[in-house]
Length: 398
Ligand SMILES: *Cc1c(COP(=O)(O)O)cnc(C)c1O
Image 1 (cartoon, rainbow, N blue to C red):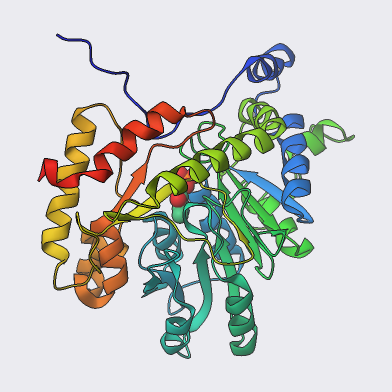
Image 2 (spheres, rainbow, N blue to C red; image 1 turned 180 degrees about the horizontal axis):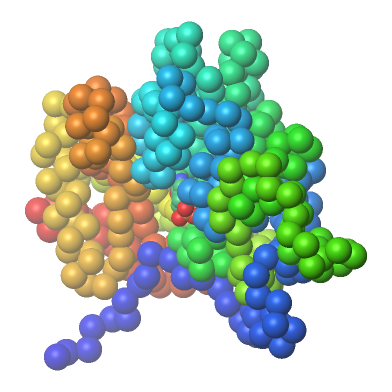
């Protein structure tokens, strides 16, 4: 086989000596379940995002479930969620027996269309889960105002949002809780993992117990106390949603390089912005004034070779073109992905709630026309130029 150019991955986790060093510590001490490293990781994370409390969990998905459960969500309740997000946002509402009510997005930001949220509020609505998608914060100030005016909770699916800011402050402001993902597709990773941040001490206390089978004390607390031979009280129906200390150690090492990772991603995004400025086929991601984008993903919207306004009338043809273009890039080792999916079009939700693709047109357009470009700290200008070359002449691949 002829030697092609080196493949370009969609992203790449950053690991080094420090990760190797810290990962061995739990093996040396034998303490591998939630313990001292998880506690250290939580402290670093809370300080970074400016939250009073941070609680590590086994994934963002289990974290979302835990917060909604702790807020008392149950059958008969409704929660407003964006229709363009990863499926886990809506699934967490379903796990509680409640109903996710989908809301369309603003195509410029891929985040909740705030004006559309209010019309969806019913007497059953308990809250809103805003998603800060791809590393750009949702319009949390407007959503927080709406939520407080209508007596709802506002919570953030911050899976992609580590490093995102509004007006110079880390995202999460005005939310009862934010939940981050530590999956390898996100800025920092512990393999699997999640982090819940909140300013509510009572909620943090409850979540701390619920993630640990409902136990009133953790293993670490019992280890440091007299009377550790007796099991603690269990007054709640809890879960095992804990993060291991191996992952906690990895998390501590990753936090130490977070600023470098984010700076690397922002530099790569700025380079794409510049290269794509004169490319009509794609609209680069937009950043509203005052927002700091963390670029968990660099997601552009495909607009056809000449740069058309995408709409339901030309969607089918543009979608065909985008898929051909992405397939050609994949064939040549340039890894691209659609941004994420329109959850209301997925079999489970379409079937259960009788939803049609056109019910949320912007989400449908984002699903069918978005392209995530390869981005990671240290991506080379040559590789970025190679990616952009395809976008300059998409018609070659139709
Ligand atoms: C990645 C992601 C999740 C799921 O995170 P896990 O840690 O894999 O559970 C949830 N919501 C959004 C918006 C995501 O991007």
